[in-house]
Length: 119
Image (tube, rainbow, N blue to C red; front, side, top):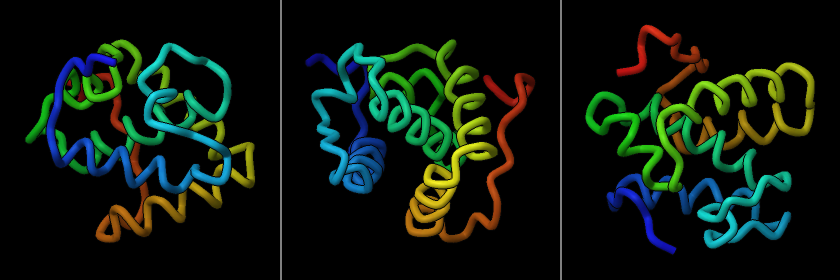
């Protein structure tokens, strides 16, 4: 699979997030595919939200999302997906909090970017 943009730091974060989904059979090849079967889009959404919070503006949003072969227009959808799952899915909330606390320990709470924050 061709990756639109590659960075060791972004790739490492993606691998760490995928590791949290190991018990659900998630593999890198599936994340980079066009699959829309859950939990694959969930992994992409968690990666995109956390990577943007961690690395933007050092990496642009197209660079961050290029790591998973999607364009910047997907970010708003992924952000909404994470917000909705976080509100209504207790298992997702527990997993997201665990991922966030381990991978972004300095971030107390996730405040999602608004449309105006996306460059």
